[in-house]
Length: 368
Image 1 (cartoon, rainbow, N blue to C red):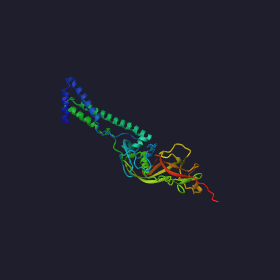
Image 2: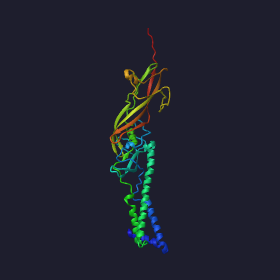
Image 3: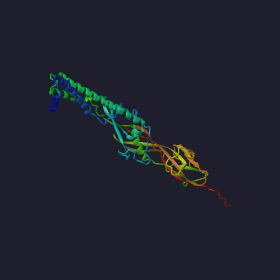
Image 4: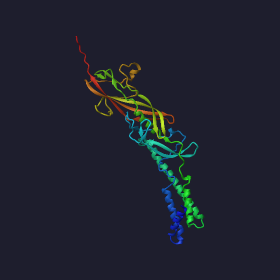
């Protein structure tokens, strides 16, 4: 390889022209070629790196990770999110994005930290999206500073060899200068630090994965009006929701850093429309027949004492007819597990449950 470089440089040297201009022209040409190579083929370039983080590897993530401010578009009863690429454990499938940044390891030295977030989190969550955008620019600026420093060191090494040589234009000297420049450029002083001993998943993305898992396992309402599913005009109709308003499930969350077993808890707030338009798939924003929000389970008509305060009822005054009763559920989900504490809450997409109710009109008839 040394002879090949020397031969190439000799050919270039002979083509430059008269002797007074050879040394300057050859040095300028070689320096230009060297800097071009350094710019397009850095030996340590990491094209997958995207961001920088000030977070310590052994620090508390909860203080630096962004909170989740959006809602997950997951229908209750579904276990599949809109982004289908990879997943496992609970059957929830999401698309993950990773990027790199600077961090400080337990020993106090710098390390390269890999962070993960779901694609949905980066798109929906404004805080996570800003963090990603800002750190992409910071990490790229850091890589550029390393490249510039390596190029400057290579130029200095090349110039030092030329300056120290009694025959700066000889093929051997030029080959030695090029080798010195390459060695300086390859120095570890101009490479990113080694990987950290762990990788980080944004808390908001963990919360999203937990919410997706919970959405596929929660118990929806099973509305009923006693005693036989009908209502009488002029008499209260009591709505039984027949599902807990707080539900906890244990889910194995499939994260890029490994599977984590978490306690996932959902709390529901709900509304009822006692005369929902037939066939409508969403609840009206306002109507005289809408009641709520409620944070308790609708109790049967025969409850007394404290339970009677949790009864939800409506009195139909019109004549006999059929109506649709609709329940709108809005779930808020949190997850707790060793290693990341409690994350969330995340709000699931609203879910509508409808119930067909027969309204009857009773009339007293005297038989005497």
